[in-house]
Image (cartoon, rainbow, N blue to C red):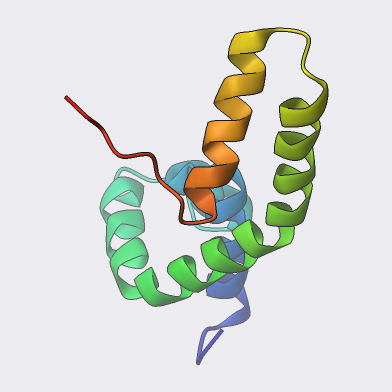
Length: 102
């Protein structure tokens, strides 16, 4: 993260973790006043790049696990619809999207 105060860095991490900017601000130590909603909207705008970077880092961390789950479903699902859906998702994410013939 670039040029963030410690409080803002923790806000970014908590916001990404919880998905709730108001709760993130409160947990980070911002005062719960009548202006908190406006403050956090401004804070999200000012930290937008850092929030996006943190989201990308988080997705990169969970991607291998998600791939393993999808692969397991594609190979071992008892339900044919789950098996087909997982296989379709794997192919789609690998860049082999099925052509819609409608």
